[in-house]
Image (cartoon, rainbow, N blue to C red; front, side, top):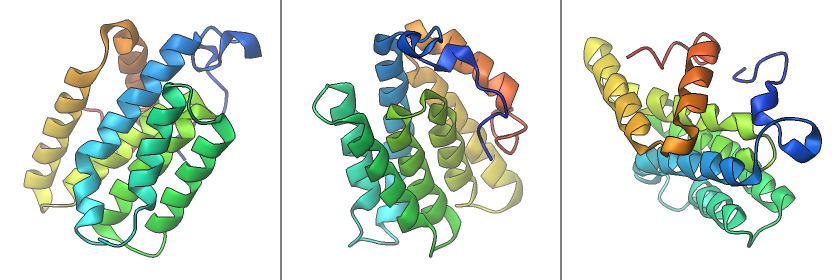
Length: 171
């Protein structure tokens, strides 16, 4: 479970009673897509004929440009998670990262799921401390990609939900 029991109004759009602007929602979606795409090769090298995770990433980017409806982007995210279920390891977590990214259109707080699953995917490419170090580097890379406008929001979300996200944001 990567979502908190109580919704954070900072991740609910203004029109739904929260404080998140549509522009910031799109920035969260694009950042989540970047996080997922950064590890997508871990899935594609294991499942070269399955395009569902890549399609989810493309879909959330299209949603951010206003070209795809929210429900369509969310459905693509669900299909990517379906690709993850029958497999294991790094490939599974990379597909989950893409699925979480796709679902940001529906619930902005999925942005952290995309990042967390991407870090888990990288961690699983090497044993023990080496995997942990790779995960720390991935987290640092993700933070470097954060647009300044949403940086503090995401970093605070990482701090608040780190335990829900398997402690992957401890750098």
